[in-house]
Length: 122
Image (cartoon, rainbow, N blue to C red; front, side, top):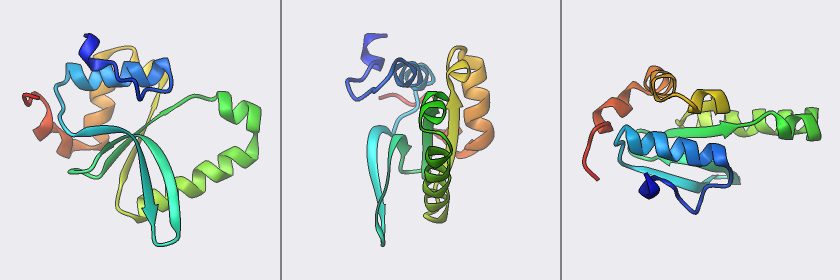
């Protein structure tokens, strides 16, 4: 279990996500990765699986409550730039992280190509 916690986690929610990926034995996810396009910096994403071009973002509503509409608009623009680069972006809420079955169902429904990486030895 300790192996699944990563010092790159910026929140307990990211630690839960890392634990779930470890429990599913999915290889290839890197944490806190910066992505750029021809216009420069796009985003620092929570989890990136480059082989399948899948991003997992662990969201909380706190930043939107505090920062308001401007933060939501910025997040929408960022999301659209990631999609334009060919990434699949999966947004996980904290409650999605609490049960492995819920997490895996959402993950594989939105990024079915990740199934071939599940259960792989590290």
